[in-house]
Image (cartoon, rainbow, N blue to C red; front, side, top):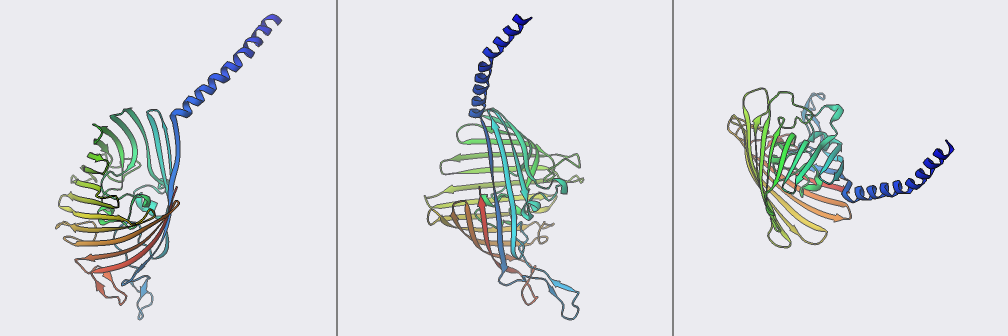
Length: 363
């Protein structure tokens, strides 16, 4: 018995360094092929109107009667008066060889607006998906991801202008489903997807599905994407159709020009519009960008101000970067074909001019 025990001990002592060496090599191999990342942003802002209400107004005759509220463009996110907060955004990513996941979490008013159809218990989830890269030409993704339509995005880091356009605000924000991304060659890409109704990110409550597609082209100077979505979004049999073109090009080393055009229709109710995004780099740290947007609601109805109403949005934004901090002063003018705003004299007017100063820290 003692000889057998000694033999086992010798084998154990002999194999122990081998096990440690093998474990170390496996760990080094996993470290070499695995990547874990943490990124995100925080943002806050100040907003005021030049010719509109910045506070609630009550009747002098009936003090309890509210006759006017703070005015803001009917677009997403940067609409609160005075000093306000945007959101804290934390993005966790992991990739190993051909597989990986992304968990994108948001906290604050901007994030809550972005995931407005989520349940209160889970409304911090902006994106949550896993993916499998079959090869260099094909990748499958299952879960919830931000929309592929439009020029602008939810995160303020990805937009030059801090406030958002009408086209972005009334298009889809997020999708949950299965998509396949294709890389045809060094320049051309494609995507096909089957998804829940738009912005139903947690599950499908109505048992109907939408279909999405994208064709993209890119080179060293810019890119262009043609996007399409089609499917029933509610219990009615009316299907939403939206087609969208997003493109942007570096015309010189300091001048960039972007464009977004879109058309959305659900049985005669919807909108169409177009926007130009010229941007000029004045130094390594400072640039100027303009959004000039035309937005028109369809004759049978629209999601913003009403049927057959036209909106023009001119937004001039400065962007100063120091380290991870981005400071954005912004002037915005909204002109509507109907009197939808109140001025400081409580008179209806068709335009609103405002100023925003935003601070964004990206990490």
